[in-house]
Amino acid sequence: MQLIAEAYDMMRGILSVSVGEMADVFDEWNRGDLESFLIEITTKILRVKDPKTNRPLVDLVLVVADQKGTGKWTSDTPLVRMNTAERQSLRSHDSCHNAHPGKDISACHW
Image (cartoon, rainbow, N blue to C red; front, top):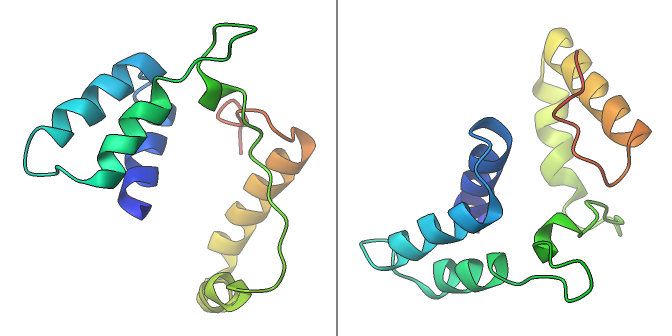
């Protein structure tokens, strides 16, 4: 799942691949060595359109989540081990994300 998320993020954020094109890429991957249930459902999910706007549903999902504490150590441990510059970069990213909840923050400059 992590690899799928990373691939989505790179295609969308760095390569500016459309959701439809991304679905085609995942579909192609699913017909090769990467064939799996997760790749298959990722393809299907990327093809779902909102019935009201006809936009890809993944574009309408807000990127927000609550924390209930489980897994908190997963992010705390690397943060403790980061150097000052890495922590500052992360803080800048967080500030931009918090200033624009639910929006693509790729336009933020830090």
